[in-house]
Image 1: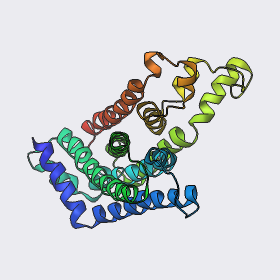
Image 2: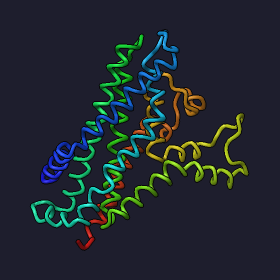
Image 3: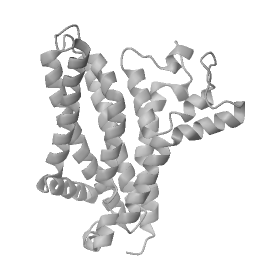
Length: 281
């Protein structure tokens, strides 16, 4: 369990450096602030019927943007930073393999973002319990678990990218390119393929999009997260639910969306480790 020692040290270092507390404060402001803001927007500051499930959907888009960026920031220098500073040689001189280093960094830094998200969600839950008329604990727990999974996934992606290079500057560029391609520009990829197939950039209002188009739009981690939230929580309003009200194809199901996140969680760190394994320090 040498990787566990690496993870423990990484988590403790984050706590000692106040990085964990800063992240927790960030998510408290984000989650609790959004809960309060949504109350004010919906009720005009005068009370009214508010349901916590509506807050979760209100949080969905901001969470799908903030959490990935935070995860990449936490993870993208985990290995490259130590290689550049020379501290990686000290780490690997101990009874730790390079696999232990990658796994430990994923677990340690994943624990950091998970703890920060939990603190933020607890703060939002307190606001919700105080100000909202209804509270669906099951839905809130489901949203929380999926948000934590998104944060850990993006942290693992950052660590995987970090393990693929010796320079922290290059790791930053890799993280930026990954975010731009999969979170900003992926819609252009799917629209481009759809245009080549049909002559139109996007399906029309009365045109049912093909299944491959729906599947491609689920590839980015945050898109998989968004679809998982919509399909696991009550009030499913996705286009998949409209096209397949009973049994969607397995690759468009909620379990497929969840599996997509897990694939990103495993594959990118594995590829990073493969590159790191053959690297001269």
